[in-house]
Image (cartoon, rainbow, N blue to C red):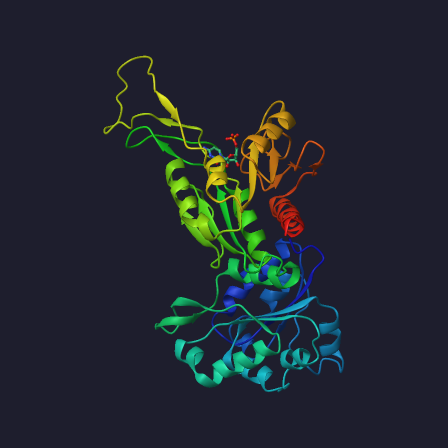
Length: 396
Ligand code: C5P
């Protein structure tokens, strides 16, 4: 995700500094090149050795280590992330104070600076702190706002460091995002559905939901307001995505339809069950005979029905095929009147259920078929969203 990106992580003196260890570890795992700069106060909470080990790079804090260290560090980075950012450091930056290595290199920075504040709720609410934040926002500093919750001091309120997933997304948004989908509302469906047979059994499938969750984040990366309608999965998502969880195909349909009127795009990545039991047994079905017959009926075709309700919406479907892939997908493209369809085959090597990678073909028409190589699901999602942005622009 961050391959070849050089990220300078600034750590200031707050108890949330222990969470920055996990951030650095994760950034390195996602192939970023990470360098850490600490303030003296940060060293009271975490030792430089921890960050040196996690980042596999020397850690700096002394502005007099050599006379150009602040320039060298900032000219060899793509962005700066200050995590946690204390009221003190934010106040200093907002007022042009450069009295340690971190604030000095910030004063020389021409790259994006992302601040992740974390502090007590009264410190966070303080009007002087808030006016410093406003001032920095006007100067295009980026903020990943803290969350509400239990604080290290025992009080409850706003000031808790944002979740790791939200910080990582904020960094992605600054490095790779755009406003191409600003003012657009996008619905994404993800995961399997579960159709109950009796109180303890269901009909479902192996969908992990990873492709749909990656698509929701890719749309948010380009500024869309995203509602993610998800069947049961083991996944979580970022705070700014409006997550609605459902179980059955009927619940998914109801939720999608309630979101539809003010939406601009629908991406149906969910593996919706095609059949559901005609009757749901009130009690657990007993193992009485050697064979058992279950009568099934088809579920509503959500994608096909949405076309009738909001014809202006840009609609993308998915086709999971294990034979005659292209011709079956073309038929679905036509029958469901889609803008394009994404074909995948979980039997292909590396693209099986639950995998972090996928090999898909984007089909716009019989003449326009683009086969993508095996890519991470975040990369596949980015290609699909880029295609949708291009097509929506040309439709305008
Ligand atoms: O017709 P088929 O189920 O193969 O089409 C797959 C596409 O239709 C997927 O985008 C899937 O999310 C959607 N679908 C649906 N409602 C169903 C079944 C599938 O919207 N009941």
